Image (tube, rainbow, N blue to C red):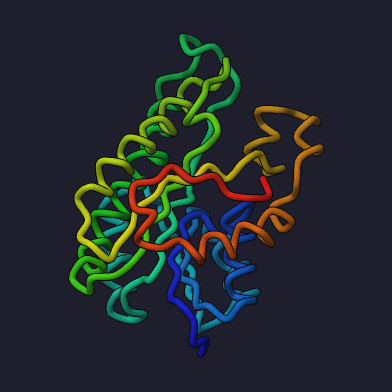
Amino acid sequence: MPQGKLILITGTSRGLGYAMAAGMIQQGHRIVGCSRAASDVRRVRDEFPPPHRFDEVDVSQCEQVGQWSQSVLAECGVPDLLINNAALVNANNDLWKVPPDEFSQVIDVNIKGIYHVIRHFVPAMISRGTGTIVNFSSGWGRSTSPEVAPYCATKWAVEGLTRAFADELPDGMAAVSLNPGVIHTRMLASCFGESAQSYPEPQQWAKRAVPFLLKIRPASNGEALTAPGG
């Protein structure tokens, strides 16, 4: 069994979540991850067998996250590093043309999902007195762009939520927001089209981002960070 950190990452089936999991496993850390699709979970489990753990969980559903947390905390222990990475982006559209169901889904995953994971895992981290929480934001959590207003709204919310949450944590812990940069993911391709291919691939990004994430310390509590390599 790896002797490194226990790291929990949401949205590990592809993109940045998968790249982070792979990079951290390579460095000897134990990963607990989740994805919404059962087929994706099976694929990642086959590639990264126990002691790593991957489960089918929709972070927008509080009850699912609660059941997951009980099982993870009992079987694996308390995470040292918790990375809220799972997110959705709306299809490019003027705000008034975004379907209500799509708008709600972006809100539910990108904001409520972070809240659900914090609600069910962070009390155990507080009881232990150590741990780092990284909430993935975006460049569009610090700026804006047309046709992705719902996504921008959620990432601006992540910035404010994280800063307030950080003020509630005890000494010895940290919560930070992280702008990962611009990386060639499926999400970016949905926004940028073919031009997304000109940006770094997730695996390339992870080579610099993973060491950066592992070095976040309590002194950074409340900071809005930007990952290298994006």
